[in-house]
Image 1: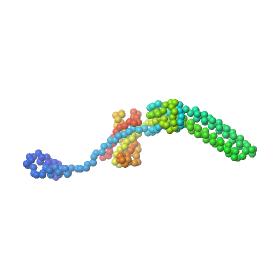
Image 2 (image 1 turned 60 degrees about the vertical axis):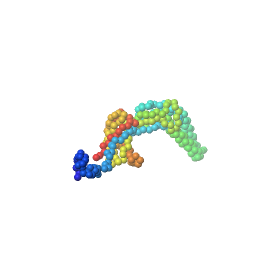
Image 3 (image 1 turned 120 degrees about the vertical axis):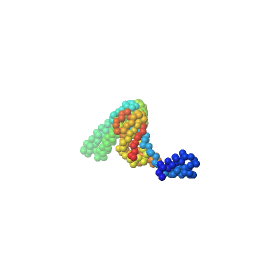
Image 4 (image 1 turned 30 degrees about the horizontal axis):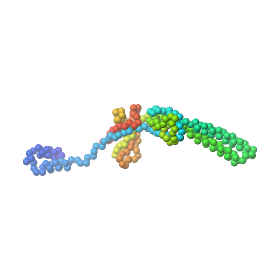
Length: 265
């Protein structure tokens, strides 16, 4: 007897007078119908996950030296080109030290030339010439060190982007390793999301999907650009990155939304 037949019998018995129903007929029909129904059917897995927009590059520029800031050339949210000087330190002291080292180098070179001439006249030994040569090398190394320190006086942008946080002001004293400002790169944003680990069977680099951003209320096309090589053992998820298919200048880092996937049937 099929499920449909059992259901018809059950309905007929339940609508008939009680006296007409053979003993146990209702219970037997109901039990047969329940036993024939599928059990442990797999639930339909949701194909929507939360997503966060992030810049391609982001960094915090910290001070490489202790000193006083002479000028801050950018403001919060300002755009800048790669190589632009974002802020400058007051480095008059370092500049004076460099000039002093240049003078010492000139003096050491003159002494070396003098010792070489005396050596030709046999009025100086090779050891004296070697010592004078070492003094020249030392002065050159000192100049190189001071030039490196002078490079710390200008904090330049490593890439084109925007300022998202300013931690210092002009004429403020700072210590070495103190954060100065945070910057993010310009251009296309990345999408970061964690999807169920079971999706690795079909979710590959290049898989297309669409994402709805909360702040704009719009839906955009995206595709997977990278997938983590490890599954999180606790949450049983895997981290992936994606990119927008089309340029969307209204989107900003930190926006969030919902990614909609279409798993294969």
